[in-house]
Length: 388
Length: 229
Image 1 (cartoon, each protein chain N blue to C red):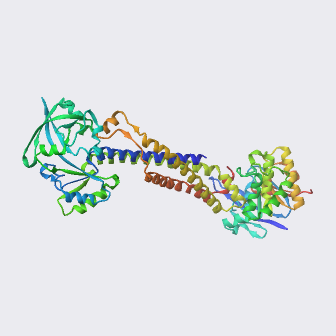
Image 2: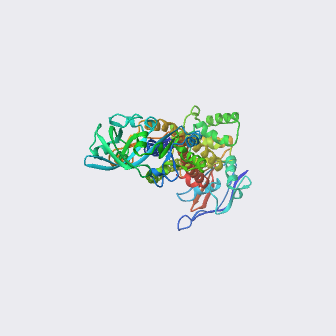
Image 3: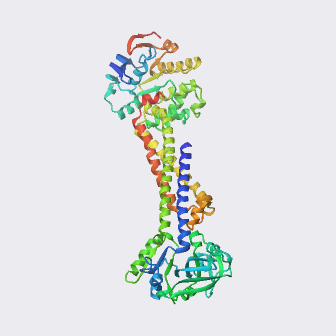
């Protein structure tokens, strides 16, 4: 009973902790990447190193055809992004202007739900949306006009005054401080770049396919002037954040495994020591040690197998519950996550891999622990054990 | 008929800095049907001698020959197998397996001997009648009295039909009535079924019922007396 309880708790704990870690990373990536840059973008090949409009491209049907030839890709959002100076009365600030397809981008950026004041854009609007922190800095409210000044395509001047149709609250504070959204046609006009875009955001459902889709695209684009790049290259700071968190996570899971190993080994040791006299009696009356070892092995496999099964079954509802009701962080941790554009929640993931990996790890721990009764039985001194 | 022959047996322990000669040059012979008590003060080597005879401990030198087999020549596996078929043990603390019932405890050794269900049932019925605990077959040891547990232990020792039974202080944990009952049973089995019993004991009641009393002191046999009983 003690062994079953110990191993059951070990499985639940290991599955829950790993699921929480991986769920949080997935949420981080989804928030910071999936809902902003996208997992993969296609650019003109020099654009990423020198993000100027001069390295932009024109909408190109053959390129779209190549992108859509990969079956997992479900859509493409075209963007025209550049920088400008935004000014209102006494305040001026450098901003990121993003020309977007207001209809198709809404499913990705979900801007219509992030509006805290005003309305969302229509494709033919001549108005803009701005981030709430930018609005606060420039002291702008819905209906005010924002003056934008920048450099257009091939060195042309880009000047415009645009009414603010709505104010959006972006999850990333950094983006919220500098973002200006406008319909792509308006952006093309502002930057004097008709039919021009800087990036094509490739949409697909499974984030784990990022690298393979990037590779497939680059393979198809290798003779062209375009390149696909994955989110890891676009958001190195997020990669670093996840890596640093993962190192902490690995340490934490290592400590957890050690606690689990001690727990499992402790109960196995106790169970063996408690029964040593019983085993000694059996050997004294004529039971071969090898037979006892086989029985002990079966017994341990049965007990631990049952415990792993119970632990797995019990961990499923627990992991499921926290995947739909994630833990919400507060305080500095929450602020730090929000600054990275990540919602401060820690959901679990129901990925089968997590369950499988944890079961394998616990099986390895149990496998090592059950060597003890076998070794102990093999070396048992019957006289000493009978004296217990 | 000679069942056990012990020749110049020594058992020396080196556990501590001082060498302990637990058994020091013992020469003994036991005939079939003996009811012998090995007596002596604590530390005289009684239990060690029994352990060596039973093959639970190896002698430092000398030999123990049981029914023509020098047990010192047997491998560990062979010794266990030899015990299964030739030697019965009764321990001071009964040492029944707590998760098994009285019947299962006694039956266990016959299962190791691969006896059929019918053979086992017949032997259990016979033994439980002989030791007077019919009706307790399906009870686990923790619900039996000390005397009843020791009787089950005797049944277990006899179940395999061994050549002899080694009983290490079998009455040490029993009250007077249980001791008398147990001795009556063992003596009856000895007389009616010619079972050979060798005890180590302090208990005067056991000594009084023994047919032979061997006194051990500092690992040596100092007296070996046969009584007329």
